Image 1 (cartoon, rainbow, N blue to C red):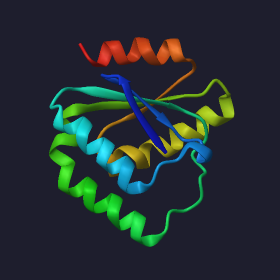
Image 2: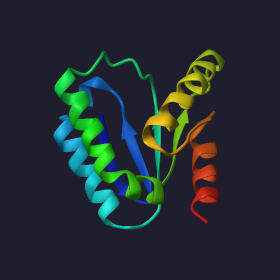
Image 3: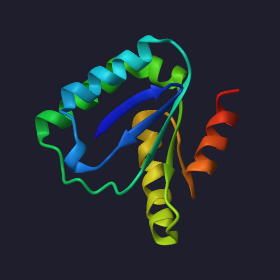
Length: 125
């Protein structure tokens, strides 16, 4: 995954494997976003199936999340996932329940970039 905060508070997540940064880089980028102490939303598209991270990466992410949970809950308003495909929307909706339980903020499924930006604007008011 790659984090792009160029248009903060709209933060783009790129899930394309060919653009992926290291787990350490992604967590450092996320830490920097939380350090701003301002609400923001993630906007992403594409699939979720990037293979299973190795055990050390999973532990690193879980430890980071636990250490940053109060700031995560306070500043990350949502993860807006864009997909126009109805089957992908159903799959993403099912996944979103697990996502929110782990991360502490909702994953909302939207059909277009325009819809994601409108929802983000609403969430950030």
